[in-house]
Image (cartoon, rainbow, N blue to C red):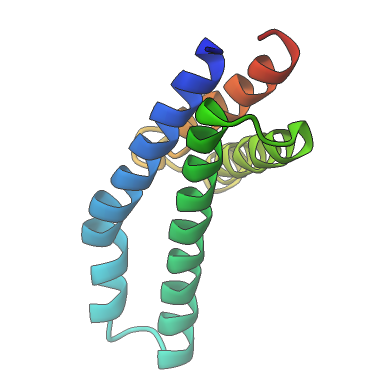
Length: 124
């Protein structure tokens, strides 16, 4: 069994659970309670939050399924690229908007998942 894919699967599920529980508490609920945003802005952001949830669930499923029945290398590279890009975008926002890297720490999980996916394909 490819250890890179095992760790990528575990981290992907961790990212999903973290997003669902911590993101729900610290991002989604306050967003919906906001009186400063228009309903369009509120629910567009809430919709995007759910798109991220769906993306993370699918990526976790792809890595997990790949452990039991090999999937297309192109699919693994696609989800790995998504994770890298999501993580790199987090880092860009930190730099551009001078955010606290620990308070905006999605990159700490997303980048390693992407790197592990690539390692699993090319080194595993």
